[in-house]
Length: 357
Length: 170
Image (cartoon, rainbow over all chains, first blue to last red; front, top):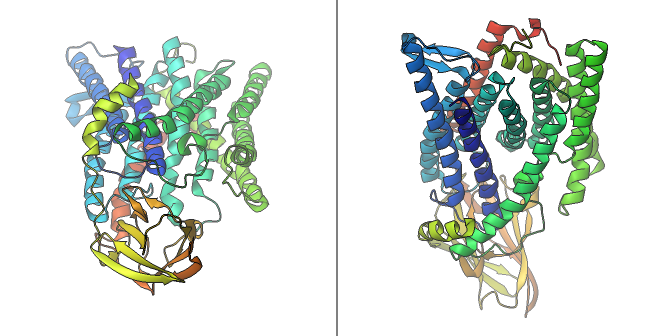
């Protein structure tokens, strides 16, 4: 039951990620939009699967609590009592369930939005941003669930495959700021910050040699899959319903996987080396994580322009942009390290393991 | 299997794509080429998407060119773009479900190359009125609620756990 609930929430998050990548590619390559498209079905069913799984786990925990057999904290994390104790919800499933419920509510708002403004496929509308935030909250809940059971191998695998989904998905929300006149695309800042913080969190939760590399490898596999799947699914779906591809398509990488840092494994190797030194020499872990966050952000910031140049013939990235991106690496890396370290201890606090207590 | 599923499930949405209606037209002259510009809604409101169609007299066969857009809501990468066929009205050029983000005066122009040579010209200023719906500040406030919820959750967890005071081992 513990495993099924955790993996069902993960499956929902994975389907949502597949859906967003497919949907973005659909609009780019084909065009027209209605509410009833297959990519939208993937997005909505992803949240529905995660939401139903969360609800089942909350009900199970509530029944168990009421019959005097409270579930262990390792199943979903700290039990949270709601409605005067009528409901007992494991924290992870509470968060993933609230994210899913929020997604469905904002889905209705999105329909209303489109009824006023039409089906203009832009990411940075209030309802779209709320939908992305809701999915992100569900994913965070899923991470809490895996983190609570982190002394078991299946949950460690879960952490290693949840962090890449978060790294892929969370920067999308930063499109909210793209209407502002900023010197740099805010999504680039989002990629640098979230990938650094989340890699640190993943490595810190796994707490074993190879943890950071496992996260980076899983991210690489996800990126490669979405790189192939998104355009393939858009073209195949268009052909199946008799819609033509847009004229004048330029050879650019698929948008969602194209924005995933493909050189994160270099940073992961550096994090492994730093953490190994910290273990060997009993170094101050707080400082080490701060350094690891900064180093990761600098690697991501320095390699993003290279990635754009290698993969996107349309990317007109100048030296000023490169300098700005790299300059942002240090402050956002420090912030990623600072918050990452604290998120590790917060996630560990949801369920103490015998090894750590 | 996935392809089969796409074919089965995909048949339903195909019916749902609205045809491109033209409720208002304007005429532009780009050198020797007269172009009929069609709008799927009129008047145009900021943030509201619509379909634009561009039809030179005599059709688009054997012609090519660029769409020139200018106005308060036009980003630099949209100022000059190739003229491409509308995805759902393939006999003419167009923009599908395109919105302008700010009200004001817009210029829709064309640089066309065809059998009569090269020609450039634009519509006299097209007025884009203020946005429909609630004020954007209110919409963004409602859209930000999940983020505010997440921040509150993290703040409560932070206060209860004091993560900086916990032991951290790697």
